Amino acid sequence: MTLIDVSHRLRARDYAIASLLDEHTTLTTDQLTAVLFSSVITCRHRLTTLRSFGFVERFIRRDVAGTPNIVCWVPGPLSARLTALATGQSPPTARALRERQDRVYANPALDHLLGTNEFFTRLLAHARLHQRTGLRRWWSERSAAAAFGQRIHPDGHGVWAEHDRETGFFLELDRGTEPLARLADKLSSYRRLVAEGGPPYAVLFALPNRTREQNLHRRLADRPESGLIVASTSPESGDDPAGPVWRLVGNGRHRLALADLPGGHGQPGPLNPGPPEPAEHPLRHLR
Figure (cartoon, rainbow, N blue to C red):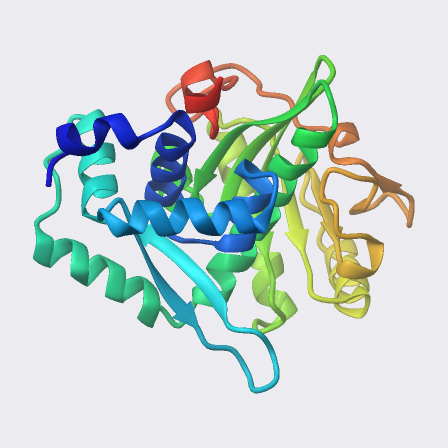
C-alpha cells in the first residue's frame, strides 16, 4: 500500500500526528487526545483506523502492578514514509522501521521521554483553551542539539507565546535519579552557548517534588550562573506549565507564569535560530 492509495482517507489532523510522532518519537493516547481531539474515544477510534492501514503503530507500556497500562503510538510504514519524503529524505526500509519501533519500546529512558512530551503537550492543550497563547516551537532533544551546534543537549526546546510576548526556553526534566551536583553542572554548557552567541533562553528545571526543588535552589545559590536565567517547578506548584508555577533562581519564592519569564531571542546567528517561523509550529498542518 502506498501513500497515494490512502490519500483520500487522510486528513490534516493525521498529518499533524505523523509530524509529532516523527519529531518526538512516541506519544500516548492521552497526549494525542489533549492536543488534537475532543475526546479520548474519538482519538482511539481514529488511531485504530490509521493503524489498520499502516499509518501508525502502537505498543503497550506495562507499568507497575495496579496501575493502568499506557498505550504508546509510533510511526507506521506510511507515516514514516510521508515524513521522510516531505523533508527530502529516503524512507526507512521495513527492517529499519521495525528496529526503530522496537528501540522505542526497549528504551530504558522511555518514562523520561514520555514525561518530557507530557510537559509540551500540556502547553499545547493550554493553548487550545486560551486565546492568544501558543507553543510556536517544540524541538526534541535531537533537533535542539543540532540547531544549537551540539553545545547543549536539553530534553526539549520551546518558544511559548502569550499575547504579543514570546518566551524561549530549554527544558531539563529531572526524575530525581541524578545527584543535584550533576544538574547544576548542566548549566555550564548553557552559559557557554550564550557567550558564543546563542539565545538567552531560560533553562527550566521540572523537578519531581518541592524538597528537591528547594535543595537545587540552595545549591545554585552557591554558584550563580552570570547572565543565565534559571527557573524551576515541581508538582506541588501546579500541573500547568504555562501557569504561575516557575520560581526564578535568586528571586525568592515568588512564582511566575511561563510568559513572564525572561527569555528573548537575541540576535540570530550560527548558534541562534532566532524567532520561530510559521513552518516550525508543531501543529502547522492544522493552521
